[in-house]
Each structure stands twice: as C-alpha cells, then as structure tokens.
Length: 148
Image (cartoon, rainbow, N blue to C red):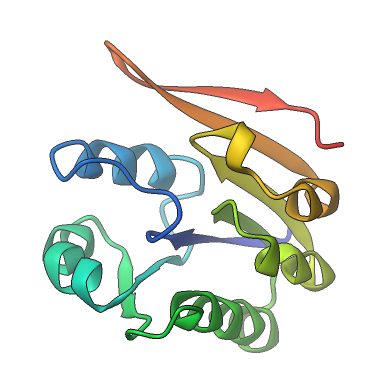
C-alpha cells in the first residue's frame, strides 16, 4: 500500500501574480490525489487577499502571521501533525526555502519550484524529487529534474 501524501504550499515563497494564482493552485493540486490534504500558508496580507479563492479550490488556508518565519513554522507544524495523526509519509512541498529540508525526516519529500535557481541547495539535496512548474500558453508545464 502506498504511503499517504499531502501537499504543503509556502505561498510567500512560491507565488505568481494575482491573475495567475488560480491556475497555479490547480496545477499544484493536480500533483496529489483528490483526497490528499492540501495546505497553503501565507503571511497575513497574502492570506487575507487569497484565502477565499484558495479555499474554493479545496485548500486549507492558514495564516503565518507577520513574523519573518511565521509561514515556515505553520507548515512545519502541519507536516509533523499530518505524519503523526494521519500517517502521511509523502510530502509534496511547493517552496524554495531551506528550512523545509527537515520534512525529509518525516518521509518522502517531493519539492516543487517555479525557479530552480532560487531553490535552496539544502532543500534540493534532501528531496527525493524536484519538479519545476513553468507557465506555458496552454497552462502549466512540469519538468522533473534530478536532485543533487
């Protein structure tokens, strides 16, 4: 039996214009099964601006407050909770931030980025897979790259 999977999205770190955000949300959601937990966190301003649209797309939207590392802390706590309470063993993470490398200790880590040049080397090294999402005329195109 395959391990359960969850999507964690750091909206402060992997984001696009307001007009493109719904399409990005759909592209990220398509990377996990429909029943998988989909959690997005953002600092207060982005949270207030985008929460309704993201909630309509079946994301659990959490506020990271106004502290510099607030969103990271929220998502790391969610990863621990999902592992402990729901048995999640695979994480699809939309972020470039090195702090999330510790999620690899919880199970399999698949990192998604829009810009591989901004991806932390530490996060890339801990990832089992790295996917680059790129905007194309027909929607979002995915390219899997080898982690280092």
